[in-house]
Length: 237
Image (cartoon, helix red, strand yellow):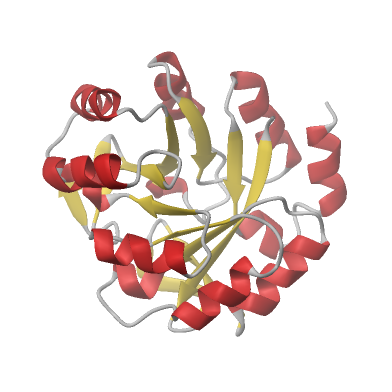
């Protein structure tokens, strides 16, 4: 089933959107992540994608209490951002998150293997964040020296078949999704949830027709260019 998943990016306690992953280009949308999440759930969201940007940038981020309140809203919550240890992952899972999302771990073979063996794909989701053809890690501030082929091989060897693919250079820009990037990972045999650049219902429908499993949407929801009716129309196609 194709899923439209609201993104809740949290920086210094507030719900924000970054432009092209740049922490200096911030738009603030809400002061309370839990209240924002509740609004999405009331509008029909079936999954919530929460990113702790503060933790990704090496700062104090979400609290256990906040994640517990998010998990209590009644829909699955996946939490990412700064998850670079088994301890960090277990902390969110124990707080009620359905899954944790890891990105930087892709560049660390041993850590990724530890996630695979200790928790597995059902509890750990992999995010592949690409900026102009290069894998971006550690809060999108570092470029990993890995090719797409190397990343695909590493994930297959460890049992991952589902990935989130983010076009960092389009994230928060409203320039439209990178359909070629998404198509590449679908062709590699992965179940792909796309992120970055979505402007509205037409972009979501294009990703659905391309064969994506779902899409994570941020700015288009916050700016109002995509409403609940639009999402419902796409899901009924």
